[in-house]
Length: 79
Image (cartoon, rainbow, N blue to C red; front, side, top):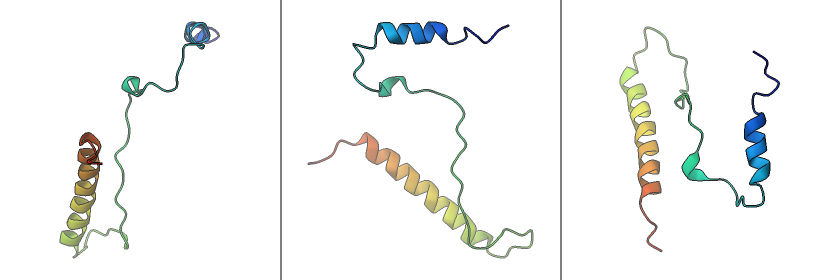
């Protein structure tokens, strides 16, 4: 199969409707696999690590911060 005309119909539809476009449509965001954000640590992880509890606290704190950011997005501002 040739890739020459793979997106031709999408480009054609865009150029037909380009005068009516008013910016990005956030309700039609692209979907796909997004890797989760990583938590970085001061020291490298070793199999004999004694501070496993501290690392788990950092991971949970990062998770809770991200959850709070999501919750704040859903709440209307009180201004």
